[in-house]
Length: 432
Ligand SMILES: *[C@@H]1O[C@H](CO)[C@@H](O)[C@H](O)[C@H]1NC(C)=O
Ligand SMILES: [Ca+2]
Image 1 (cartoon, rainbow, N blue to C red):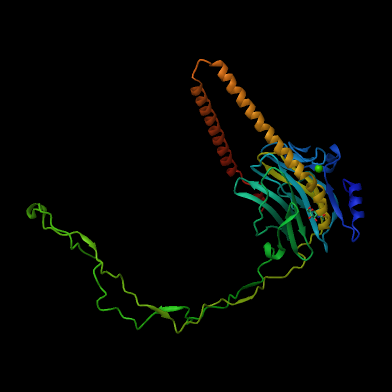
Image 2: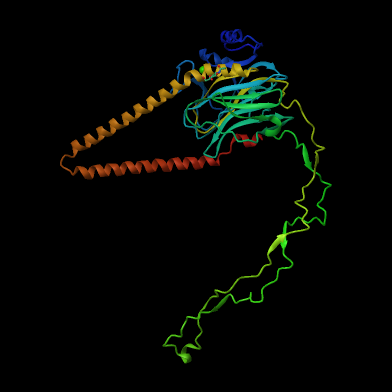
C-alpha cells in the first residue's frame, strides 16, 4: 500500500469500506503547511518556470482545506511533479481525480495533469517527457474549452475523438477519469458523468476492424440510375417559343424622327408563352440494380488488443502546463482503483466546500458593487459642492460621457488581449 500524505484519513477510508480494500496510490490535499514542498519537485529543464504557491485564493469554502497549488506568474510555463509508489493498473480500475479552480477568469492556460511512468526524471520533466495519460481541462480563448483525455499507446499520444467541454467559470470543479480493465472509460465533472464509452471506439489506437475490399470494383454494367428520362416522351410540336419578344404594348414615341434617330424598334420583353428548355419526364429505370455497396473485409492490419487500458508503471503525477493569466488552483489529487471511494472523497472535499466558496465570491461581488456605488455618490456630491454656481446638468452629462469613454477604452484593450492570445500556440501542439 502506498504511503500517503494523509495516512490517518486514508486509514479511516479503508476501515469504512467493508468489501475489497481500495488502493490509494496518491492522495494530496495540501493540508500540512509547507510540507508539500518536500513532496513536489520543480523541474530544472528550463530556468524560468513559473512558481506554484500554496493558497486558498481570493474566495473559498474553507480557508485551510481549500488551500492548493496556485500558478502565481503570468505568461509562464509550469513544471512540478510528485512521486508515489510505482504501480500497474493491470486488472483493476484506474481513477484519477483532482479539483481545478480558475479564479483568475482564465483566458488561456492548461488545467490538466499528466501521469508518468516511474522512470521519469522529475528534475528534467518537460513537454517532451513521455507520459501515460494526460487528463483535465484546457482553455485558450473562446475556441478551446475542452477536457483532454490523451493516452500514450505504444509510444504515440492519442487524443479522444469526442468533444468534452470543460468548465470555464471561476469556481472549483472536480475532474475525474475512470479507466476500466474491460477497456471502458468514464469522465466525470463535479461527480456527474459527462462522457463514457470504449477506449477502442473513442480513440484511434487500433486501425479499423473492417475496411473496403480493395479487390472489389463496381461492375462496368452496374446500372445505379434510379430514374431515367422516358424514351417514349416527345417534345410537343408547339413547345419552342422565343424567350423574348418585342413588347406588343410599346408604341413609337410621337417625336421619333426616323432620319435622326434611326428606325424605331420596340423594346424586348419576356415572352409569356416561353416554356424553357424541353426535358422528357423521368421514369423508374427498369434496369436499376440498386446502389452499389462496396463490400468490406476484415482489415488484415487489425489486431485486437484486450489490454489497451493497461500500463505497467505509474509513478509520478505532474503539472506541466502553460498559462497566460495565472491564478489557477489545483487541489485534492487522488489516484485510486476504486471509483466509489473517489466519489466519496469528491463529496467530502469539493462537495463540502463548493457552496460556501460560491457564497463568499458572491458576497465579495456584492460588497464591491456597493463600494463602487458609494464612491460614485461621493464623487457626484463633491462635484456639486465645488461648482454650485455652474449648471449642474451639464456637469453630469460630462461625467457620464467620460465614463463611457473609459469603458470603451477598456473594451478595446480587452479585444487586443484576445487577439494576442490567438497568436500563442498551445504547448500541446508540439507534443503531439
Ligand atoms: C455523493 O454526493 C451525491 C450528491 O449528494 C450523492 O448522490 C452520492 O450518493 C454521493 N456519493 C457517495 C459515494 O457518497
Ligand atoms: Ca486542499
